[in-house]
Image 1 (tube, rainbow, N blue to C red):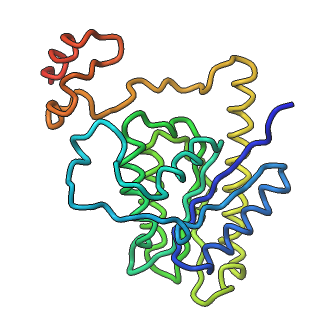
Image 2 (cartoon, one colour):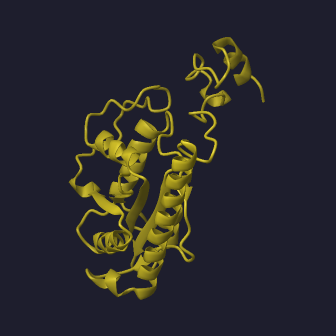
Amino acid sequence: MTAPLRILAINGSERDGNTADVLRYAAGVAARRGVEFETVDLRTVRMDRCGPCGDCNTRTVPCAVEDGVADVVARMIEADGIVFAAPVHGFGTASLMQTFIERAGVGHLRFDRPLTNKVAGVVSVARRYSGGEVWAQLTVNALLNRMIVVGSGFPATVHALHRGDALKDDEGLTNVSRLVDRMIDMMELLAEHHRLTGQDGPIHTGEANERVGLALNAAEFEDVPEPGLAPESALSAQARP
């Protein structure tokens, strides 16, 4: 018997408010499709900001800061789909989600892109302004991690001011519902592909770390060969334009 498909939502809000309400709504959509839906509320995760060490761009192993970020990353790797959800604060992405993107992305995910070919969805919650900008930032972050981003027609941006307003935005919730359904459609397609072929994903992943070979980072990766090349060949490859 195959395990049920699972979606993990990352809630970047500092409170149990409209963003949490939208994710609970999304969980109901997933449940009707027989898909597990779990939410990580970043406000409950012990998460330090990036410190003064400044070695993020030169280290070749995950971040040494000991907090809850590594555990959240591990849960993301185990999921079939991931929803990134955050409210607009100060015309930008809420600070908890911004911190998580920085810590998880640079400190853990960039080395071998473990989220490659996982299905991603993005939800932003805004009173009126900058919902599209936050949605776009989170979408680019998913693309950076080589995830498969599904569309919902209009972006899944929900408008709300006071607690409870999000559940009154019928159009926004329709887009969230469509997003979750399309994520599940893609997850099922990928699962069927795996069943038929035994391969983890239909899309070639290429090199594990796209930073290898960039002249700016040559010193960082001078001992790391390109896929299929001996170490001495990798060094000469870094010098190619």
